[in-house]
Length: 506
Image 1 (cartoon, rainbow, N blue to C red):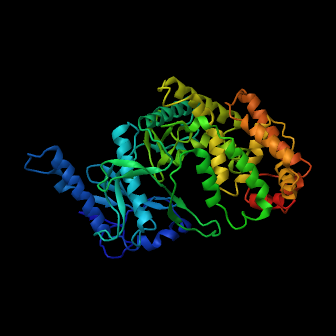
Image 2: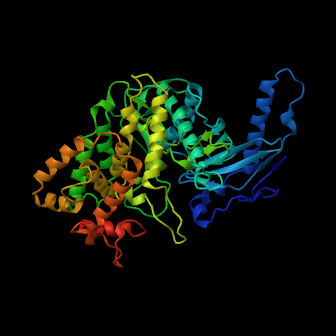
Image 3: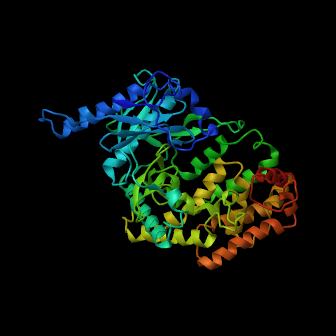
């Protein structure tokens, strides 16, 4: 028996309501939601459960799966590309059905390879490591199947989303937070067991049982000229032998028509200097590893004690330098290195919306210490890999995200010149467009080459340093160019793009 949602309109049965998604969440997904055959989806899940029981007791004359029922709930999660239906079986077991929003039509070749690559790569990781990645029990890659859409049937992630627990005052003690940080480090360190010689994605053989070589990087891209919601498109590029080439290629491919204008030439030059400063020691032979492309707390589940129970959403899993893969910090404890996204301050009720710079540095210290204590083989890990990962991540974001780029470049100037930058980004851009920035270029190149070191200040001093950085941005002689139209001198907020354009027009 099945109890089914009725979006398709062809099934009797009750609708299980759950979640609080609104119209804006579901609009993009409506076309595919309308064609899913939920009867067949539930039947497929029940058949797989029956096969599991049969495999455990092959000589038994009865199969407990024969009496199971399945309740498919409305999707409770809408990501940027996928939606998730929770499937509850009558014996208490829970699965999820994960459906790509753009699967209403058959995938093109690159989409198909990307869809299968996640399935095969996470299967490999489950075999090679003990990272708690939910198992995938079954999948379809096209529309020519009884369900009518591509999908995966996966184990349900047990525990609580860390993004909820982290900000829950009843759960989130410093002891639990640190415990979770250390547990994530332990799990991610296991990625050292698989080594590669290039940046890209695993190129599997036709039956998916063996990987042949490092193939092109498979990623989801979005047209920088379009601002309406979209699923984007699958893209392949590379592979690359080093992080510099990879970063320059990402920067080139992410440029909009506006970004290519001479007005942005100073930004691009300064970013190229930062990319050129990336230490070559990060790219020595066999220095590449698989990494999670979005190691953020919404993709991590924990139990009541703070132990990690699941790491989900391995879309975009790829091979990168170790500093961007197994050694990198989780992204929510590096938010201060992406200033336009870091919303540190009090809300209207006087509550802190973000962890302070001092707290974030403390969590990074705990993570780095955990990685060092694991004593990984020297040939597979260096403490510099973790220490440098904040800088490398910031450069990567600046390369791929135009809106974030100016603010990250300002922070890199502040960091590289140890809190005493001799010029602002505005001044550099202005002089560079005039052809009079040679001395600034040389000074920036030298400072960037020396910025690759660990965060040496204590937490209190770092907090003071970061607040001074914020003041520097707003108190520089040309800081009026970063004010919003209503005259408010703030770097953060909904109108940050407006300030960005005003800044660049000096």
